[in-house]
Image (cartoon, rainbow over all chains, first blue to last red):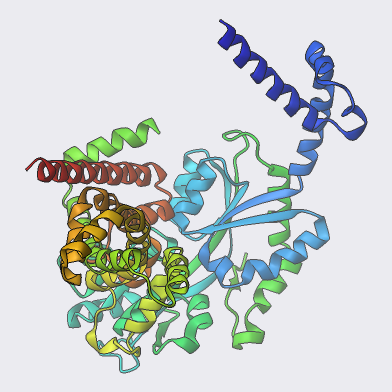
Length: 305
Length: 229
């Protein structure tokens, strides 16, 4: 019994110390006994802290997005302008499209910016997203060894190029990670998708775009990539851009605000402000200009309405 | 959590061919990484722990620093060595299980040396005095120190195995996480996490822990048997 009492006393001490820690300097002189006698006195100050919280979290917008728009430098280029104008702070989490969407489903994001139409529609169908707002696009490109062993240079589109790669059994690196790029690649293969277990030329890397391009470089293999990532790495790669702008290589990016009726604790106001700004003329101009200075070409194009 | 546990057992019972292949690669890699780093590290650690020589203090500090070598850095070093235009590029070993073992040995050998030397420093005083009195050769003394303390050294070996099986940074860089080839449990977990399949990823983690547990139990049984003999 004495032991139990001692433990209880110790617990009380800890609790009261913790309570003291929360106090501001002017109340810290109160001795611990007093705070034990009157725990209710602590409540108002806690409430005051809680009340100030929503105001703080309101200025933070959590955006879950794919690696291509973040690693290509687009968001680091755009968001400071938005933050300066509005006073919001945008926290960007970048991952493959699959993970980017899952984070929003788990309630860890206020909006998403991704590029996989089917998954986006499923996200909305399940009630997690409000509306899909496609706003910009670019093209996937196929890169490969400079001597182009499969001869895809003059192909009309990606499907034709893939058929030639398959026919010649030239090495091909697939993302294999459920990302937007991987899904787009699988869509182009259609029913002819190679089997990574049986077709040794088809390498399912399960890694990000940059790692896959490095692997393609090492193995002198073909790879389908977003143009931005390839351009940013080009000087270190012994690979050529062999095919772009095929009709099946368009890559559309959408913004979706997470549905506040499905998930609580969202900063919907902030998400809407960011979406509105991203669709504004000012942001459009910035997006269209992005990449011109560094690469001489635009990396993203605006969707005509 | 509950869903992950359920999935983990479903996975184990399903005998999914891909999971079995990944487990196979994982165990093969960990076996060779552990064996090679112990074959190099245990004798060196014993020598370091039982001998005095000039520069020993510096060497020990160096080993202890290397024990903290970040896996990503070990991976990068090995990648640079085996890349196409690197010094060993001609061997064509990048993105194979072999080179994953090389990277892991770079990572684990210092751990084996460091742990075994600190242990041997205190444990072998009597053995060495006796052996010296008997006039045994250096090689015999080393062998005696190792075999006298084999039960304790097993914890060093298991530590090395644990490092190997749990490591992701180095093997993903040099192995490339290629499906049906260099994918191991940790890189598969990374992949599923990146895909957003968090429950499945955690289920794989549970499977990995179960396998590691079985290996640990088997190892301690073997040593107990050996001690009883």
